[in-house]
Image (cartoon, rainbow, N blue to C red; front, side):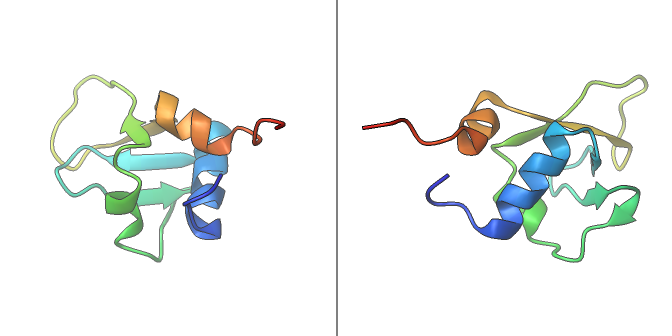
Amino acid sequence: MAGHTHRQLAVLRAAAAGHVEMTCSREPHLYVDGLACCDPTLGHQLAGLLVPEPAAPRGPGLRVPAVLTAAGQAALAPPAAA
């Protein structure tokens, strides 16, 4: 979990639980439980860890479920024992 803020990890956990949507756009906006995320830069920060789940039709600005990438799953994994 090193390298990520508490807020980023909270959003990743919420996405893993199916509570996060994001817009299909170059600058994604996040919604948690249907409410707009109060930190507009958070979507940009997490762009490599979250992806919009494919939906039809998929157009600019469409809100779709956010899913974790492999990197997002790794960020939530407990640290390996040394």
